[in-house]
Image (cartoon, helix red, strand yellow):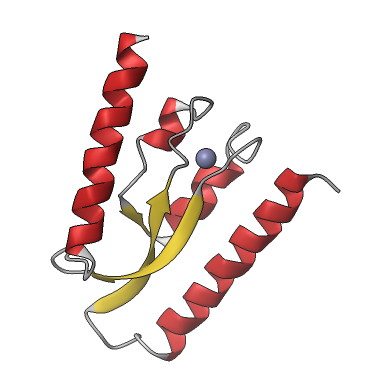
Length: 114
Ligand SMILES: [Zn+2]
């Protein structure tokens, strides 16, 4: 069993748990759990992974990403459950997201220079 498979099993299990929370707890609310995407922003990070850093996705969007091509392969991204307002897109961890977007901008610049 490869490390990639272990990580994918963990990610998919987390996505299933989030779906259950959304159904059982947040069903009638404007708020839903999505996933805040953390790229490793490592030298080996693929652009398609790094550009997701600091962005909140639905569980379906996350599953779709990992169902494509080689996305699960050597992927160091992690997905953190995050409350998001489905009407406004507002997240509670504004400061964290701002820091992440700044880190991504710096990372992308360094990739482009190389
Ligand atoms: Zn990744």
